[in-house]
Length: 260
Image (cartoon, rainbow, N blue to C red; front, top):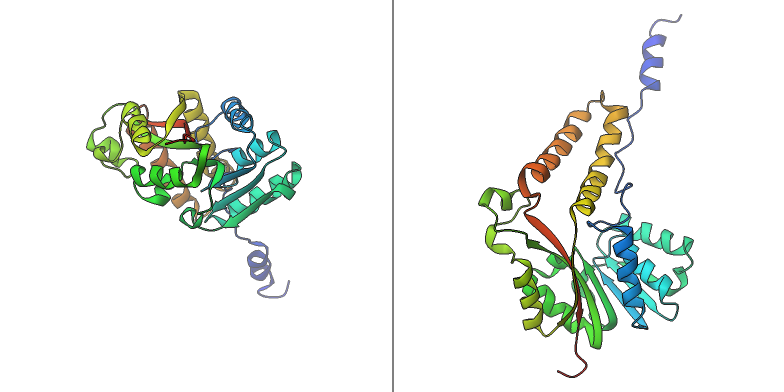
């Protein structure tokens, strides 16, 4: 053996492990079951919209499902997450609605053209506060149209530590009744009020953590594993020991009356 060859072969065969997955175990970036998603999409499609806009769409799964049930509609999905937008385009093409939807990398606040149906699930923070978001979404909905708003509320009044587990203070959110009152004060009428159940939450959080945990199963001995393990453990602890059964998530179907 030539001196040094063994060392060279060892270094040449060492490769960096792949990065953990990116929402690979989730259909939605929200606590939302297939059953609820299909029912929501069906209810939106039954309004026979011609234009559907999803602001902060991620990969636009709810938008794609609604378009599949509303063959006369076109759609727009907007998000700042490039990887999410790419996934949305690919999924739309595979499921036969790619010619009726545009996915754009942009901020939700840049969308100003009204639509018959506006979807905003887990992205109202793009507008600032919940009052600001509801005001902006009301302006995006044609009179007689609807907005599907997925947003947070307090299941019960949290302690400062419980609120801090999701980066909030206790006064940043309302309870469910207060949230609905806020929507009404903005000019909407509540057509349907739903909230994520524990099973939806557990599927969502487990799916979110699965990208890290499945990576650790295979690459847990790599130098980068300590940071990934720490991130996963921290998120799980904040969920299970922090805001579980405290932070709720509502799906509000809000109508904008044709005559105000």
